[in-house]
Image (cartoon, helix red, strand yellow):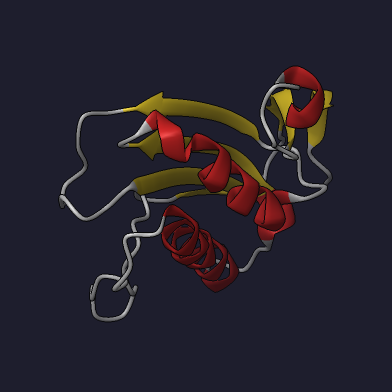
Length: 138
Protein backbone atom coordinates (compact mmCIF):
# COMPACT_ATOMS: atom_id res chain seq x y z
CA UNK A 1 0.00 0.00 0.00
CA UNK A 2 1.49 3.31 -1.04
CA UNK A 3 0.26 6.49 0.56
CA UNK A 4 -1.44 8.95 -1.75
CA UNK A 5 0.13 12.39 -1.52
CA UNK A 6 -2.23 15.13 -2.71
CA UNK A 7 -0.93 18.41 -4.14
CA UNK A 8 2.79 17.85 -3.66
CA UNK A 9 4.93 20.96 -3.53
CA UNK A 10 8.36 22.17 -2.58
CA UNK A 11 8.87 25.06 -0.20
CA UNK A 12 11.38 26.72 -2.56
CA UNK A 13 8.35 27.55 -4.75
CA UNK A 14 5.96 28.38 -1.90
CA UNK A 15 8.43 30.54 0.05
CA UNK A 16 10.78 31.92 -2.62
CA UNK A 17 12.08 34.58 -0.22
CA UNK A 18 13.45 31.87 2.08
CA UNK A 19 16.26 29.42 1.44
CA UNK A 20 14.15 26.27 1.84
CA UNK A 21 13.92 22.99 -0.07
CA UNK A 22 11.31 20.78 1.60
CA UNK A 23 9.14 18.22 -0.20
CA UNK A 24 5.67 18.55 1.34
CA UNK A 25 2.05 18.12 0.29
CA UNK A 26 -1.38 19.42 1.23
CA UNK A 27 -2.84 16.03 2.24
CA UNK A 28 -1.83 12.39 2.68
CA UNK A 29 -4.33 9.57 2.27
CA UNK A 30 -3.58 6.22 3.91
CA UNK A 31 -5.48 2.94 4.03
CA UNK A 32 -4.98 0.17 6.54
CA UNK A 33 -1.56 -0.30 7.99
CA UNK A 34 -0.15 0.51 11.39
CA UNK A 35 -0.28 4.10 12.61
CA UNK A 36 2.70 5.25 14.64
CA UNK A 37 2.06 8.34 16.76
CA UNK A 38 5.33 9.84 17.95
CA UNK A 39 5.68 12.00 21.00
CA UNK A 40 7.19 15.39 20.25
CA UNK A 41 10.88 14.70 19.74
CA UNK A 42 13.42 17.00 21.33
CA UNK A 43 17.20 17.26 21.01
CA UNK A 44 17.98 14.53 23.50
CA UNK A 45 19.02 10.89 23.43
CA UNK A 46 16.22 8.36 23.28
CA UNK A 47 17.99 5.90 25.58
CA UNK A 48 18.98 8.12 28.48
CA UNK A 49 17.18 11.47 27.89
CA UNK A 50 20.50 13.33 27.95
CA UNK A 51 20.22 16.63 26.10
CA UNK A 52 22.34 17.36 23.07
CA UNK A 53 25.06 19.74 24.25
CA UNK A 54 24.44 22.37 21.60
CA UNK A 55 22.41 25.55 21.23
CA UNK A 56 22.66 25.35 17.44
CA UNK A 57 19.26 24.90 15.76
CA UNK A 58 20.81 22.80 12.97
CA UNK A 59 22.45 20.35 15.41
CA UNK A 60 19.27 20.17 17.47
CA UNK A 61 17.15 19.48 14.39
CA UNK A 62 19.50 16.72 13.24
CA UNK A 63 19.08 15.02 16.63
CA UNK A 64 15.31 15.43 16.55
CA UNK A 65 15.03 13.98 13.04
CA UNK A 66 17.41 11.12 13.88
CA UNK A 67 15.13 10.28 16.82
CA UNK A 68 12.08 10.34 14.55
CA UNK A 69 13.78 8.07 12.03
CA UNK A 70 14.94 5.67 14.75
CA UNK A 71 11.48 5.39 16.32
CA UNK A 72 9.78 4.78 12.96
CA UNK A 73 12.38 2.11 12.17
CA UNK A 74 11.87 0.50 15.58
CA UNK A 75 8.16 0.32 14.73
CA UNK A 76 9.03 -1.54 11.51
CA UNK A 77 8.88 1.31 9.00
CA UNK A 78 10.99 3.89 7.28
CA UNK A 79 10.92 7.62 6.67
CA UNK A 80 8.87 7.01 3.51
CA UNK A 81 5.98 6.13 5.85
CA UNK A 82 6.04 9.56 7.50
CA UNK A 83 2.72 11.32 6.87
CA UNK A 84 2.68 14.35 9.18
CA UNK A 85 5.06 16.56 11.15
CA UNK A 86 4.33 19.45 13.49
CA UNK A 87 7.34 21.69 14.06
CA UNK A 88 7.58 23.85 17.18
CA UNK A 89 10.19 26.63 17.22
CA UNK A 90 11.06 29.01 20.02
CA UNK A 91 12.44 31.63 17.63
CA UNK A 92 11.14 32.34 14.14
CA UNK A 93 14.68 33.32 13.11
CA UNK A 94 15.61 29.60 13.31
CA UNK A 95 12.89 28.61 10.83
CA UNK A 96 15.05 28.39 7.72
CA UNK A 97 17.84 26.46 9.47
CA UNK A 98 15.40 24.02 11.07
CA UNK A 99 13.37 23.43 7.90
CA UNK A 100 16.48 23.06 5.72
CA UNK A 101 17.81 20.44 8.10
CA UNK A 102 14.46 18.66 8.37
CA UNK A 103 14.31 18.66 4.58
CA UNK A 104 17.39 16.44 4.43
CA UNK A 105 15.39 13.69 6.14
CA UNK A 106 12.13 14.07 4.19
CA UNK A 107 13.48 14.50 0.64
CA UNK A 108 11.02 12.75 -1.68
CA UNK A 109 8.65 11.85 1.17
CA UNK A 110 6.16 14.77 1.01
CA UNK A 111 4.50 14.66 4.47
CA UNK A 112 2.01 17.30 5.53
CA UNK A 113 3.55 19.86 7.86
CA UNK A 114 2.45 22.47 10.34
CA UNK A 115 4.86 24.94 11.90
CA UNK A 116 4.37 26.93 15.08
CA UNK A 117 6.43 29.49 16.94
CA UNK A 118 5.97 29.11 20.68
CA UNK A 119 7.26 31.08 23.63
CA UNK A 120 9.06 28.11 25.15
CA UNK A 121 9.43 24.32 25.14
CA UNK A 122 9.69 22.04 28.19
CA UNK A 123 13.37 22.87 28.69
CA UNK A 124 14.80 26.35 28.06
CA UNK A 125 17.77 25.03 26.04
CA UNK A 126 15.52 23.35 23.46
CA UNK A 127 15.03 25.41 20.30
CA UNK A 128 12.99 22.89 18.31
CA UNK A 129 10.55 20.05 18.93
CA UNK A 130 8.90 18.00 16.20
CA UNK A 131 6.08 15.54 16.60
CA UNK A 132 5.35 13.13 13.81
CA UNK A 133 2.92 10.52 12.59
CA UNK A 134 3.77 7.60 10.33
CA UNK A 135 1.59 4.90 8.76
CA UNK A 136 3.40 1.65 8.02
CA UNK A 137 1.73 -0.54 5.36
CA UNK A 138 0.51 -4.00 6.35
